[in-house]
Image 1 (cartoon, rainbow, N blue to C red):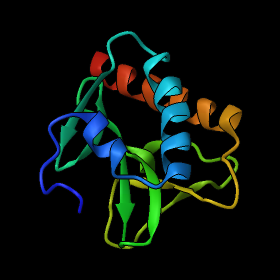
Image 2: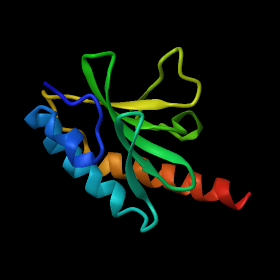
Image 3: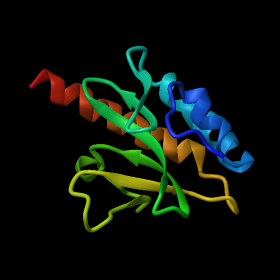
Image 4: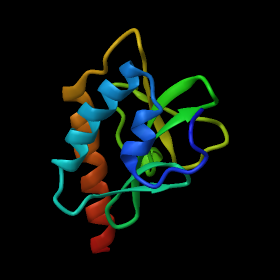
Amino acid sequence: MAPTHYFKVEDYIETLEPWMQQQFYVIRELILHTHPQIKEAISYQVPFYKLNGMLFYFSIYKKKQFVFGFCDGAQLPDPAGMLIADAKQRYIRHWKLSKEQEPDYELLAQYIEAAVAYKLAKKKK
């Protein structure tokens, strides 16, 4: 049975299916290598990545999808149409992860870099 409270990101990762763990580790590395001040922590019982506020997170969404969330996703360009909007979420957009297909990590890295650039530009204002 999964713990009710996670204290470390590793605790969260341990509860994931193997395919989710593999994708999580790759995306986590992309995030942490994008900017040296990005911090990783558990918030709301999921892994969040912060830089001048909430930036990204991983979550099981609607109990059946594993997603990588962009906290300011509505503000980002989405040339490949990868960011999914939920009608109830004003700012957040999700990149849906799948067991059947690994994400295009190169494309995802471009989105991660765009989100970091947006957050840094927002801070300067």
